[in-house]
Image 1 (cartoon, rainbow, N blue to C red):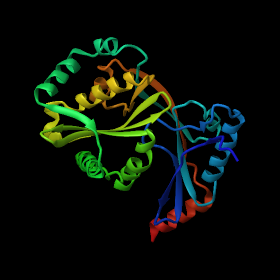
Image 2 (image 1 turned 90 degrees about the horizontal axis):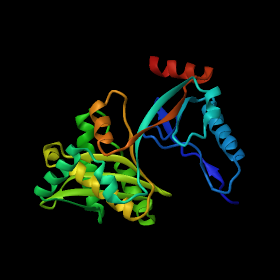
Image 3 (image 1 turned 135 degrees about the vertical axis):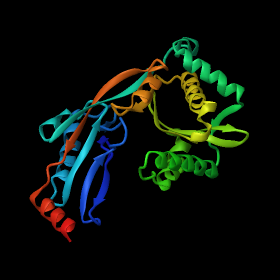
Image 4 (image 1 turned 180 degrees about the horizontal axis):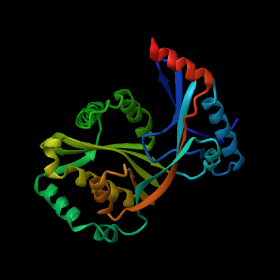
Amino acid sequence: GTLLAGIPVLEMPIHRGILREYESLPWGCYGSVIMRNDSSPDCIGAVLTRYLNLVLSPLCLGGTVVDFAGNSSMLSNAATSVGDNFTHVLKLGRPLEEISRDYDYSIKKNLKKAERNSVFVRDANAAREVEAYCDLSDEVAKKYNRPPYSRDFFRNVYELMTPLGHARFTLAFQHERPIAGTLHIISGNHIFNWLTVSNPSFLDLRPVEAIIATMISWAVSEGYETYNFGSSPGHAEGVIRFKEKWGAERILYKTYYLNKLSMTASLISRLITTF
């Protein structure tokens, strides 16, 4: 048959793999039900009902749905809590000169600094350069004291999505050394900055600004409509100001948390924790 709609879900093993959580892309501002243009709105209800059945299964501790598309509001009745989140989106669809004219003075100054320091930007064109991106990602994880992202995830994105034009790994170099990178996810007329990483020792050369400016320029030349900088924690004032200096606007969306434990899962969780 024809695939009409679906929702991406990560099955997260908990407590030695005995229990589960079902997360719909919890680490970004994308998510929601994905639909074909010619499919019926009834498909949304069918997909979300199936998701709720997963969450309500006996060995599930809960789940999360990030509703950037705004089509999953039926979950509000089942959610234990609803979060208000935001991302920053830059509207394209106009000449690059007009877009760059709205950049903050500090962005323009830092782009000139990157140029003076011979920072150049291009897409990763070999598996070893994706590994270099992973090395930078690990550095960021270490800086913020969090577990690193799976290298297999990045490898799969490069091998499966990049050839189809659905993703781009882009690196900034100085003297052939990768010093920063981004992974962009591309869907329809929209580009999403999934993860920007960098070597902290080279941030003063402004490679991050160089990469973002290069991607915006490419997106405009290819006719894309929006550039999504990605979600920001509410307390990350420096990150928020950085995104707004490009002229990006704050866009709100909902996150639905379904954390009501079933009696069976709650009992098993307590037993595992005890022993």
